[in-house]
Amino acid sequence: MKSRDRLRIAIQKSGRLSGPARDLLERAGLAFRESRDRLFCFGESLPIDLLLVRDDDIPGLIADGVCDLGVVGNNVLEEQAVAREQQGLPAAYAAVRQLGFGGCRLSVAVPQEWEWNGPADLAGMRVATSYPQLLGRWLRENAVDAEVVELSGSVEIAPRLGKAEAICDLVSSGATLLANQLREAAIIFESEAVLVAPAMACSAYATASW
Ligand code: ATP
Ligand code: ZN
Image (cartoon, rainbow, N blue to C red; front, top):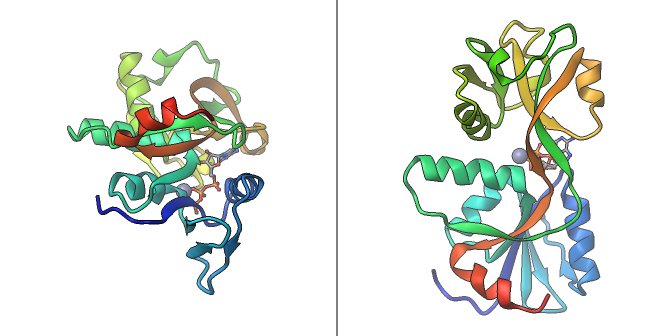
């Protein structure tokens, strides 16, 4: 990794975590000059700049040494960490701190009329998700042989479209599930926003007094 004289923090450009992440940095005394393309914000109060990106890109930016810190949902971080592990790659980053916002859970949900008896119900079924790694790991842990159908969005309508029998998606209030005649059957991962740093830097952050 090239050394830089300014720190670079990656946060979500627009979405659920962008407002709380900006507030957090502001409360820490950081002020930024907005650039026209709003991708890069120059830090005016300290030598700390911001990169505004899609949340899915944040783990990779940390792994590649493009950014020194990031704010991202632990669900995204863990999904990509499992993918790296599956490819035999070493851990490149780690969560150094939970941030207390962006709380949600990754859950398996089934049509409301389904009498849920446990993970074994999914044997031979298709489960739609944007989190194939976390779902795959949970299915393996429960020794369930189900087909993982990867979708990038609108996972909740997959059963109605005949693409899958069940889904695995992020849930906070449960309103989206209810609106789609689905009910939460099993929580497979609990998440919140975390501060992520390169694996090499993590021991230093762990010993820092904050
Ligand atoms: P991007 O355009 O950056 O890829 P996105 O659509 O993937 O955005 P958002 O929907 O803004 O992401 O969600 C960002 C994060 O917010 C999630 O990864 C998760 O950690 C958290 N989150 C909290 N509650 C929910 C929820 N009910 N549904 C989805 N994500 C939630
Ligand atoms: Zn995303």
